[in-house]
Amino acid sequence: MNISMGRLRRVELGGCRAAFAFSAAIFASLFFGAAPARGASCESLASLSLPDTTITKAEVVAAGSFTPPPPVGPPPPIGGEPPNWSDFPAFCRVAATIKPAADSDIQIEVWLPVSGWNGKYEAVGNGGWAGSISYPDMNRALREGYATSSTDTGHEGGAASGRFALGHPAKVVDYAYRSEHEMTVKAKAIIQAFYGAAPRYSYWSGCSTGGKQALTEAQRYPRDYNGIIAGAPANYMIHLHVAQVAIWQISHKTPEAMIPASKYPMLHAAVLKECDALDGLKDGLIENPLACHFDPKVVECKDGDEATCLTVAQVRTARAVYAPIVNPRTKQVIFPGMAPGSELGWTLLVNGKDPLIAGDTFRYIVFKDPNFDLGKMNMDRDVAYADKVDAGLNNAIDANLDPFFSHGGKLIIYHGWADQLISPGSTLNYYADVLKTVGAPARQDMRLFMVPGMQHCRGGDGPDVFDMMPAMSQWVEGGKPPAEVIASHKTKGTVDRTRPLCPYPQIAKYKGSGSIDEAANFVCAMK
Image 1: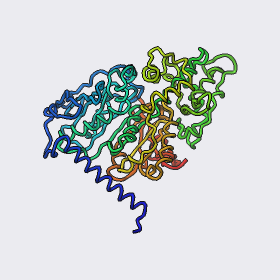
Image 2: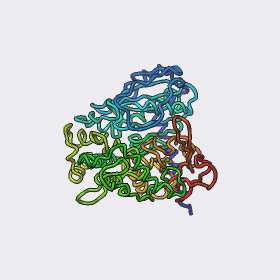
Image 3: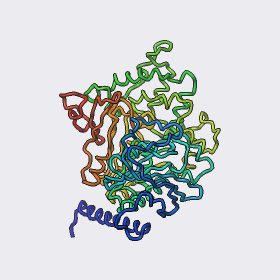
Image 4: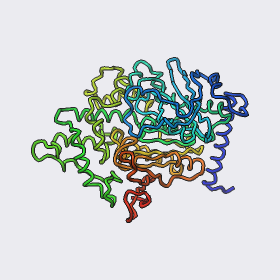
C-alpha cells in the first residue's frame, strides 16, 4: 500500500485524538463514575471529592460584586491596564487546596461562568515567583466565556520573593511544575462536575513566569492542553537569573559604571537614529533589532560627564548589557544580551539595589544562604554549581515537543523586542532548537511573534495590546494558523497606532501609502 507521509501523519493524529478523547472519558469515570447528565449546583461543589484536594469555597458571585483581595507584595514588573471589576459577570467561584506532597500547600481558584460558557477552559499563568492567584488574567478569560483557573504555585509571598524555597524542596517542585499540572487536572474535574461535560478544548496562556509555565506544560505534560500561548518565557530560568546578576555586578562594580536613569532616553534616541529606518520606515520602532549593530561609543563624552553623553565607564556598562553573558574561562555563552531598543526599561535591571527576582534563586535555591553575596558570584564555578543543584528542575528548555504536537497541540510564542528583563534572544534560541529537533511538525504547529518596541509582556513604544486567544482558538478548532495578529498601542488610554504582528521571520512591511499608524497599510513579508 502506498500512503504518503502527509496522509500517514493525518491518520496518526486522528488516532491520537481518538485516544485523547477516550482518555478524557476514562478520566471522568475515575472521578465521577458515569458522566452526569447535567451539571451540579455551584454550592454542591464544596463536597466534591478529588485526590489530595480540599474544596475550601464554592459560591456564586453576583455580577459586579467581586473585589479581588489586595495583592501580596509588589506586583511583577509587567505592564498593562488594571482590569475593570464593576461590570464583571456572575460566576461560580471555587477555591481549593491541593497537597500532593506532605509539605505542599497549593492554592487554586476555578471560575465558572454562570451563563454563556463557551465550552472551553483557559488556565492563566503567573509572574515572577508567583505566590498569589492571577486575578487580572482570570478576569479577561472569564469575560471571554472561558472557565478559567489560576494557582499561587504552592506558596504565598508575592511575585518578588523566593524565600519560600529555603528548606522546602517540595515547594520548589510545586513552583517549578507540579502546581500547574495539579491545578489543570483538578480544574477539569471541577468543570466536568459543574457543567456535566468536560471542556471541549483546553488552553494555557501566560507571560514571563507564565510563559515558562506554558512551555513546562508542553514539555512535561503534553496532553494537558490543546493550545498553549507562551509570552516572553523565562524558560531558561537559571541562566536568565545568572545573566541578571552578571549585569547587576557590572553596573555596580564602581560608582562610575552606573548609568543614571536620566540618560536612557538619550541613549535610546541614539539607537533609533541609527537603526529605526533599517526596515525602510522611520516610525520610532526597530522592526528587526538583529540588523542593528549599534555601538554606544557613538555617544561617548568627549570630556567629563554630561547629560547628553555617556562616560567611558558608562559606555562599557552599556556594551555589557547588549552583549551576551559568557563564561570567562570557556567563553561559552550563558545567556544572550539585550536587544537595541530596550534602553528605556534598563532602570530595573541596571540601577536596582538588588538584581530583581534573580537574587533569590541563588540565595534560597542554589546556595541556601540568605546572606549569600551576589557581588562575589563567580560566572564560571558558581554557574556550573547552580546548574548541578537545580538539575533542570526550574528550566523548561527541552526542545522535543513532538509529544505535544503529535496529538494536535498548537504553540504560540511571543516576545517583545524591547524586553528589558528577558533577552528576546533566549526565545529565538529556543524556537530554533525546537525547529531543529522536531522538524516539519514544529513548522506546522508552532508560531513565533516578535513584537517591535514592546517591553516585558506589555509596555513600551510598540504595539503592546493584543489578544492571542482568538488566533489560537481559530487554529486549534478551525485548523487556520494565524497569518497575523493585530496589535495596538495606547497613549493615555487612547489608541494611537495599530500594527500587524507577523509570524517570525516575517516582519510588518509598509505598503507605501496611507497612515503609518494603521495596520491596514502594512503586510507581513520576509525581511
